[in-house]
Image 1 (tube, rainbow, N blue to C red):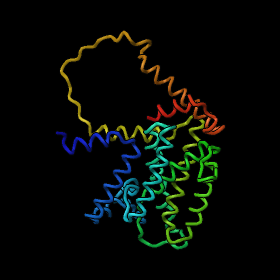
Image 2 (image 1 turned 90 degrees about the vertical axis):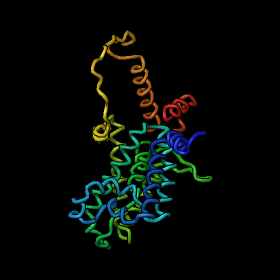
Image 3 (image 1 turned 45 degrees about the vertical axis):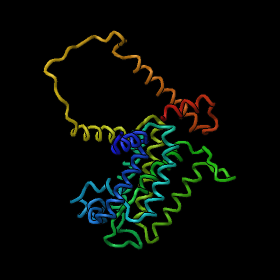
Image 4 (image 1 turned 180 degrees about the vertical axis):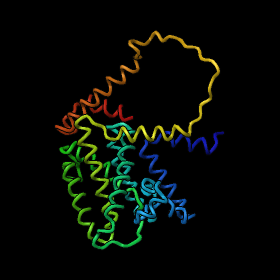
Length: 281
């Protein structure tokens, strides 16, 4: 009979990377309900002097929620945006935008919080809103003419993005001005990331390499005393067939994404849509 741990591991393995982030947010929320003092070590302070003592909070605040409704709406948005995003882009790109959006939102919060007209001194920053904004605005900027249906109405993505940014700009003068600052920081990151990617520049590659190197520090590999080197006859010019297939698939994805950015998702053929769906898997 299979154990509960095996069942949980199997179900988690079926989740995409953003769904796994939703699980992490939920776990942190539950832990916070049981041991609330722990959350104070994850939230981003509004004072730069306090932040210096807790530099990790520039990222961990985005995984922290105090209110259930706050967390629920953020996770619902992350789920639906994530399904659309991962049908078009790689999981690592989603992670880059998610965490760079958090960092950019946190920096804006630290730099400009004291200049808000109704700032509340000492109010820390929590929530995944900046990261979710980054993913959403990225999509809006990358394929602005793509249409989304709401009941019987159709809206282009750039309309939605512009409306969200306008609401956050107005929010600077409200009681949650600090949150609005972070939202705008995340939106800025998403917009710049998308525009640079359309030019062929992935600004998240540096962050991706840094995180890969960081997690590699915690991986220990056993060294074998002797290694037997066999020449791989399946390689041509130092590349395997799998390398060529991966390269060709990525080029095909780039061509399709460029078509989406110019003419919208509906301009794709059924074969192109099927190929994107499979690639997203």
